Amino acid sequence: MSDIMWDSSLSVGVDPIDEQHKMLIERINNLSKAVEKYMGHTKIIETLLFMTEYTDFHFSTEEKYMKELDYPAIANHLIQHEEFKSMLRTLEEDFREDGATKVVSKSINTFLGNWLLNHIKVVDVNFGKFLREKGVELTE
View 1 (cartoon, rainbow, N blue to C red):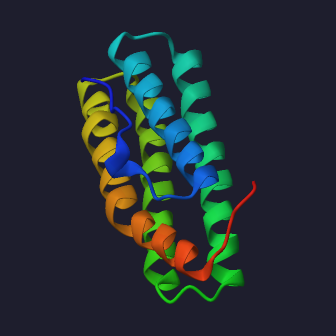
View 2 (view 1 turned 90 degrees about the horizontal axis):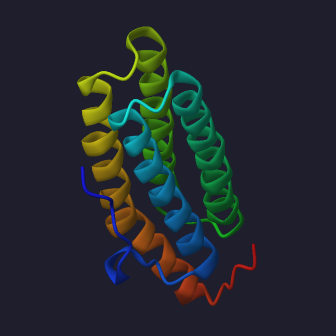
């Protein structure tokens, strides 16, 4: 798989969220490489666990502001966050059971990568627009 590359189409216009998205993209790229190159069970599990922890951190940041500002699309956004976390848990379980298979690698490359890109470009961009319209500046 070629790396997911950050470009302006992924910017939500809110620096802390953009920086967190860049980190998520970097981690998906690292995870994909680790599985593709069979870097070892421990390295892949560490990367999966970091992805899970960082995703929780990132989503909690977004969700905090959604709740505080009464974001009108919060229900759908929360559902999508849960969907992504569920995908990560499933990938971790699959890896623990089956190892670095082509199926696991493809799931990381296509499912996680495509989901994240689509989520950022549509759902998170709308949230960024909402924040900017409210005049909210995040400092986290």
